[in-house]
Amino acid sequence: MRGRKIAIIGAGSSAIDLAAPMHAAGVDVHVVARRERILFHEKLRLRAAQRHLGPSPGWFMRERIAGLPPHLGAALQEPLVKGNQISVRFTQQHAKAGELLIDHVIAATGYRVDLQRLALLDSALRNRIRSVAETPVLNRNFESSVKGLYFVGLVSANSFGPLTRFAYGAGFTATYIMPALTSAK
Image 1 (cartoon, rainbow, N blue to C red):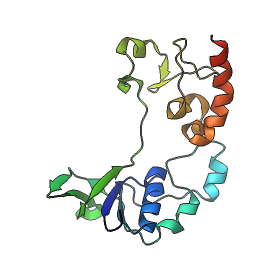
Image 2 (cartoon, rainbow, N blue to C red):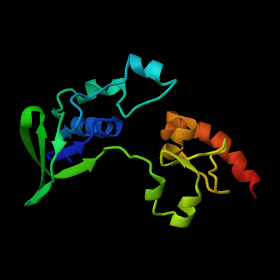
Image 3 (cartoon, one colour):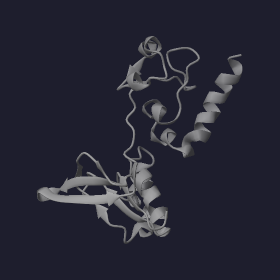
């Protein structure tokens, strides 16, 4: 990847966690985001971890992306293919226009849960799932209102809290879902 030019769309944890090692490896990385600054969780993370965690990189990533040129406060326009590259065009505050000719684009923009968009589930089944704010309402074992249908990860955050969005929450999830699954035989 050294010598390549890459745009990463987004300024949260996924975007910065990808940008930092690429930058360290000599890739010409550009972070393009609507935000006007990158929010690093430091002291706030200690307090907020008890209640919620937003899409921000950890404090330890700040120095790892030093020197990386962020393009913040950006509104993306339609990307165009120009030869073997992609034109990532955007405007910033005060109508300042920008364009990057990029070899690869990575969308690290996050994901909003919406049960009705889960096409892998039949629409009749999706309609049977009790939900709040487009997310399933889950019992203490991560089971939905449809017996035998469980949801974990990001989809479970509204029922169990933000830590279940991340791999860190997998241990908690396993302690509740495994007994339910093993006794369901």
